[in-house]
Image (cartoon, rainbow, N blue to C red; front, top):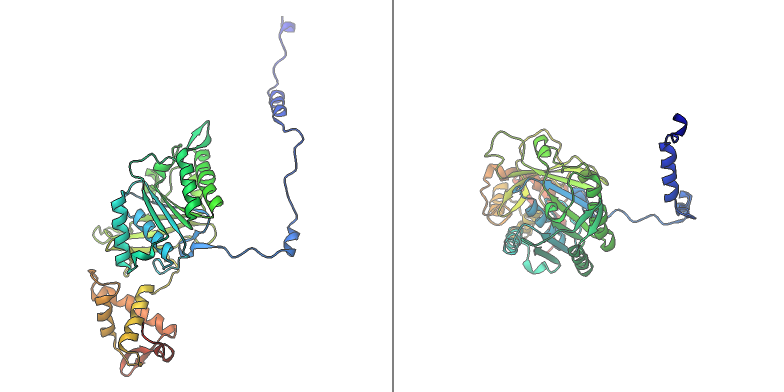
Amino acid sequence: MSEDLPPPENPRAKANSNVHHLKVRNPKSLPVEPASLLADREPPPARDWVCEGLGIPAGRVTSMIGNGGFGKSTIAHQLGIACATSTPLFGMPVQGGPVFGLYCEDEQPELERKTRSICEAERIDLGKLDCAYFLSRDGEDNVLCSFVHDQIVLTDFYWQVDATFANLKPRLAILDTAADLFAGDFMSTPHVRQFIKVALGGLCRRHESAILLLAHPSASAMASGDGGGFSTAWNNSVRSRLYLRRPKSDDAEEILDRRVLEIRKANYGPSGGVVPLLYRHGRFILDPEPLEEGAKPVRVTHCDTRLSMDVMQYFKATAPAGQIVSFRPIFDAVMKGGPFVGSEIKFETARKPLQRTLKSLVGAGLLASSNVPRGYRLAPESAQEPPP
């Protein structure tokens, strides 16, 4: 009877047979060339950044992850306004251009309130926001893609967004949030990678735009403090990742209005830096007295750019001939009309930032210090310039 049985199947032979049927007929070689040809070409231009201090490259996808209600949208809005007006953010230069913000959680009046609050606090003329476009999609269907058999399917709304990119040509696009835009499995690496590389990456490549994608961390990431998002693909697929959290402290009152913005990943620059922030007057500012956590601070400008401008404006208006001014009148003038106006910051808190700014301006040759009498004056070159 054994002679009547068919021979056993050979799984490897069957697999090879299937592979044979999948082979491409007359395949063409991939286009490759020797690296030696680079010797005869001009080098590529230097890497373009939206904000190098935060590790946000131009033309690529960056994610900012943080718990709900921590201020991701506000910081993103501040970045958008800084980009649209080419003004620094947290003392770091921002390379400007058109901005498109797509907000799925904030209603339009809230976007207007944020815009007005930030511009008023930073003394930015609303009339200069002619290349900033903030759109509320609260309550709308905002899915950019879905998946069929793990294959991405771009929606009609995606192509509306694509047409908007083509029209506005944004240097920076803010997408808030991933939960509203992504209809795949958050734990599926193929789904996540196609969403970031094909859907969002396609927008970046076609329109030379940078994208800042806002997202919430997973429950395990919140517990561990890693700030990741479900599958590791949420971290691996982006070129840069920021994480917004509260400072580590047992004093609940101290950390209530404080945040820490961490550069968790930066493929084109240093990662691991932290930016301590303080919420004041509808926006975040650099924390003048950050809580000690033992973390290495990010290397950014030590003096606030706006504070430097206020000090120089004060000297050119009140002591243009090089008169020596002591510290206290400078402090009083800044508190009355500078970045601390209307805040609850007291002398002890604002003194150190002003001292650092004065020291920086002396080091830059814009001011000169005096011991007798003790104080500061315009450097001779600066004193020759007419007051603004």
